[in-house]
Image (cartoon, rainbow, N blue to C red; front, side, top):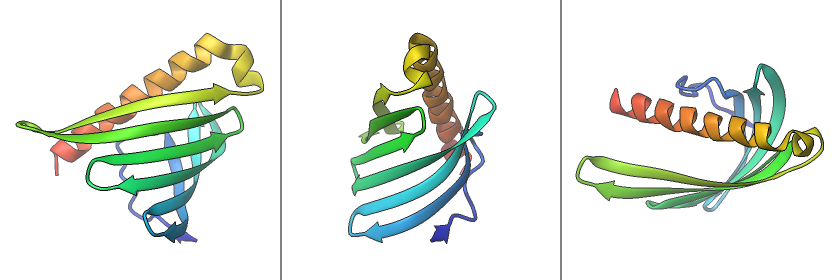
Length: 121
């Protein structure tokens, strides 16, 4: 397992990340995330299609999800978009709209943090 020693600190969402497998354009990751002050484990599969797309499939105890990240060159730099589809399960399903709002908020904060981090480099 390859532990990421220099995980960028622009977001408090991921508290631990380790690469568990690399095969071709696919990377599998084991992570710990913090949502609403509660830590939980997360497993992800990243399929990289450079330079324009990354497909991330992930699972936590409360949901499975797929996110398609697209990168598009624009005059100001690079436009990053993320389209997230989630299937809540267990308690997360009961929380429904509240859980959806929290996920949307987390994704927006993560994107803002990424933009700020990249712009300072």
